[in-house]
Length: 228
Image (cartoon, rainbow, N blue to C red; front, side):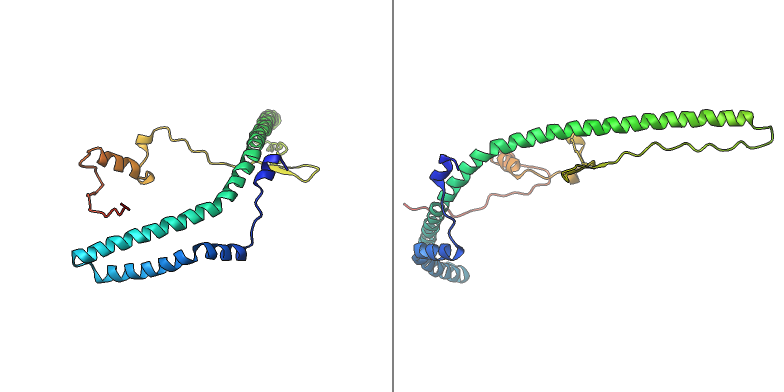
């Protein structure tokens, strides 16, 4: 193990330990969260009818936001050590994995080229056999007395190519069909195969576009709660 990996090795705790540990860190917050959620549901169901209730609603929303942030901070701090370890491991192994993948693809291309060569060779052999059979048929027809039917020459098929190769070590390789799609003219692609890009629609509307065919939009009031 490298020094870099040793510096970030974090023991993987058991599920029970994690549950107990997190409960110790967030117990009070979780309890407050439950209370706040009950109050929020109660206020939401009854509705807000005056400015006092409005103020209480906003205050409760801010408290809920505070609990959200505190719980998120706990989550981030607890996950961070493992993320650091993951980053170091990825940096240590991914470059080699990517190189191996590239080399393997190059090697596979060489194997595919040889397979294509064998197919071409087989077709040439089949063409030679076909021509030879045709010549033999013509010779037989010339030798056959008038009024009699010449024997039919059946071309011998070329030996088929084995599409699966099994090595001595047990590795197997076989040729298969892989779908490759290239969009050469996006404008010609039928609409049913295209998804609207919401981010572009959003940017256009915010940029002042008033009408987009097939899109209905409106500006609605929303509440933003912040701590002073």
